[in-house]
Image (cartoon, rainbow, N blue to C red; front, side):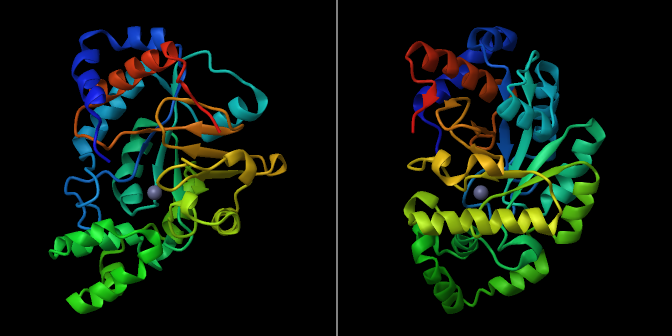
Length: 311
Ligand SMILES: [Zn+2]
């Protein structure tokens, strides 16, 4: 997704003021940044989709966040959402979507070294490299010149498999050789080290394009898998792509005590126990620029009465 012009302008201008001022003016205490991978070389299955943070950029992001916020656990976010335990200090919780191998190889050691908790959202069909997300297939096809495949929707995803056969591209061999996703053993190790996990649907569709029954199936099947495979006593879900056109309040019953997440930026949400996160990967600018811009934008949204996502 490209960065809108007004956001780019804020990214240039907002860092002229100390970040603590934007923090104070915005009145926001909880910040939820999200990423997918950290890698010095953008992996071929992602290269044609979005930029990724290098190790150096990611470490700089974390140093910025640690300077201005306190890292908090997912448990603390549950306490905030379900037991009204407010944050007295500016706090952040890191999340990572899609369950990619770099979460174990690259991100995990950095977070352990800095003592930062994080939650990882998994697609049940892809854990252990069973299959590849259709967008990643499109990126692999774009790499061999089939750039039109980048426009392919979830409903048309079988076309990507047909095109791959025609191009002599073998997704199964790619999965076996590259192992782009986390394995069950890696996830268990991370869980034992204190990291937390949630579901991110079965195979990453745009949920708003599915029927209500299909939406429920994507959610319940992936959440049941993550909960039972890793023996978790909590339920968290991050919407794949976007939660636009969806009412999370109708998809999770209060009884299941599920915490769900979108990616609409630093905004409040009308749906209960549904929190919005901020995408860190849309540009290669440093955290100070993109986070200052988002907090400045939040000040503007609040003034315009547009801070809350209505459902
Ligand atoms: Zn995703």
